[in-house]
Length: 117
Image 1 (cartoon, helix red, strand yellow):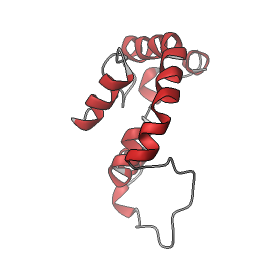
Image 2 (cartoon, helix red, strand yellow):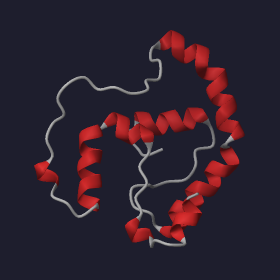
Image 3 (cartoon, one colour):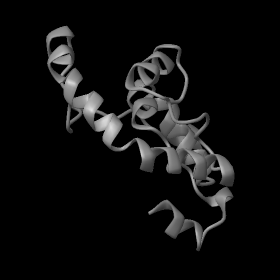
Image 4 (tube, one colour):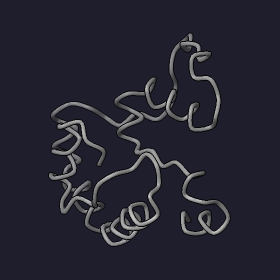
Protein backbone atom coordinates (compact mmCIF):
# COMPACT_ATOMS: atom_id res chain seq x y z
CA UNK A 1 0.00 0.00 0.00
CA UNK A 2 2.79 2.42 0.81
CA UNK A 3 4.37 1.84 -2.59
CA UNK A 4 1.13 2.99 -4.21
CA UNK A 5 1.13 6.27 -2.24
CA UNK A 6 4.78 6.88 -3.10
CA UNK A 7 3.83 6.93 -6.77
CA UNK A 8 1.94 10.17 -6.08
CA UNK A 9 3.77 11.78 -3.16
CA UNK A 10 7.50 12.29 -2.56
CA UNK A 11 8.99 10.80 0.62
CA UNK A 12 9.22 14.30 2.12
CA UNK A 13 5.40 14.35 2.22
CA UNK A 14 5.03 10.94 3.87
CA UNK A 15 5.36 10.18 7.56
CA UNK A 16 5.16 6.70 9.08
CA UNK A 17 4.77 6.26 12.82
CA UNK A 18 4.91 2.99 14.69
CA UNK A 19 2.01 2.07 16.92
CA UNK A 20 4.44 1.48 19.77
CA UNK A 21 5.87 4.99 19.51
CA UNK A 22 2.41 6.51 19.41
CA UNK A 23 1.37 4.45 22.43
CA UNK A 24 4.48 5.25 24.47
CA UNK A 25 4.62 9.01 23.86
CA UNK A 26 1.30 10.10 22.42
CA UNK A 27 1.78 13.79 23.12
CA UNK A 28 5.24 14.06 21.53
CA UNK A 29 4.15 12.08 18.47
CA UNK A 30 1.05 14.22 18.02
CA UNK A 31 3.21 17.37 18.15
CA UNK A 32 5.55 15.81 15.58
CA UNK A 33 2.60 15.04 13.27
CA UNK A 34 1.15 18.54 13.59
CA UNK A 35 4.56 20.09 12.86
CA UNK A 36 5.04 17.73 9.89
CA UNK A 37 1.75 19.06 8.52
CA UNK A 38 3.10 22.60 8.80
CA UNK A 39 0.89 23.65 11.67
CA UNK A 40 1.68 25.24 15.02
CA UNK A 41 1.98 22.42 17.57
CA UNK A 42 1.93 24.92 20.44
CA UNK A 43 -1.80 25.40 19.84
CA UNK A 44 -2.59 21.78 20.75
CA UNK A 45 -4.81 21.36 23.77
CA UNK A 46 -4.72 18.48 26.20
CA UNK A 47 -7.75 16.23 25.61
CA UNK A 48 -10.43 16.15 28.25
CA UNK A 49 -12.50 13.17 29.20
CA UNK A 50 -11.76 9.50 29.03
CA UNK A 51 -9.74 8.06 26.17
CA UNK A 52 -11.51 5.33 24.24
CA UNK A 53 -10.17 2.77 21.83
CA UNK A 54 -8.86 -0.72 21.42
CA UNK A 55 -6.61 -1.94 24.21
CA UNK A 56 -4.22 -4.87 24.13
CA UNK A 57 -4.26 -6.89 27.36
CA UNK A 58 -1.32 -6.10 29.60
CA UNK A 59 0.28 -8.02 32.42
CA UNK A 60 2.41 -11.08 32.78
CA UNK A 61 -0.40 -13.67 32.48
CA UNK A 62 -1.85 -12.15 29.32
CA UNK A 63 1.59 -11.69 27.81
CA UNK A 64 2.55 -15.33 28.45
CA UNK A 65 -0.74 -16.59 27.04
CA UNK A 66 -0.40 -14.52 23.89
CA UNK A 67 3.32 -15.17 23.30
CA UNK A 68 2.89 -18.18 20.99
CA UNK A 69 0.32 -16.36 18.86
CA UNK A 70 2.43 -13.20 18.68
CA UNK A 71 5.52 -15.19 17.68
CA UNK A 72 3.58 -17.06 15.00
CA UNK A 73 2.14 -13.83 13.56
CA UNK A 74 5.58 -12.24 13.65
CA UNK A 75 7.02 -15.09 11.59
CA UNK A 76 4.03 -15.15 9.22
CA UNK A 77 4.33 -11.44 8.40
CA UNK A 78 8.16 -11.29 8.48
CA UNK A 79 8.66 -11.17 4.70
CA UNK A 80 6.20 -8.32 3.97
CA UNK A 81 7.50 -6.43 7.01
CA UNK A 82 11.09 -6.83 5.80
CA UNK A 83 10.01 -5.32 2.46
CA UNK A 84 8.28 -2.45 4.28
CA UNK A 85 11.36 -1.65 6.39
CA UNK A 86 13.55 -1.76 3.27
CA UNK A 87 11.18 0.56 1.38
CA UNK A 88 11.05 3.05 4.26
CA UNK A 89 14.82 3.07 4.54
CA UNK A 90 15.38 3.28 0.77
CA UNK A 91 12.96 6.19 0.35
CA UNK A 92 14.10 8.01 3.48
CA UNK A 93 10.61 8.17 4.95
CA UNK A 94 10.53 10.41 8.02
CA UNK A 95 9.61 8.92 11.36
CA UNK A 96 11.02 5.44 10.80
CA UNK A 97 14.49 4.06 11.36
CA UNK A 98 16.28 0.76 11.57
CA UNK A 99 15.83 -2.63 9.99
CA UNK A 100 13.27 -5.33 10.61
CA UNK A 101 14.13 -7.19 13.85
CA UNK A 102 15.01 -10.85 13.36
CA UNK A 103 12.60 -12.01 16.06
CA UNK A 104 9.80 -10.74 18.23
CA UNK A 105 12.17 -10.91 21.21
CA UNK A 106 14.61 -8.57 19.42
CA UNK A 107 11.70 -6.28 18.59
CA UNK A 108 10.76 -6.08 22.29
CA UNK A 109 14.39 -5.38 23.25
CA UNK A 110 14.41 -2.40 20.88
CA UNK A 111 11.23 -1.08 22.46
CA UNK A 112 12.68 -1.51 25.95
CA UNK A 113 15.69 0.58 24.93
CA UNK A 114 13.37 3.30 23.61
CA UNK A 115 14.23 2.68 19.97
CA UNK A 116 11.83 2.64 17.05
CA UNK A 117 10.96 -0.93 16.19
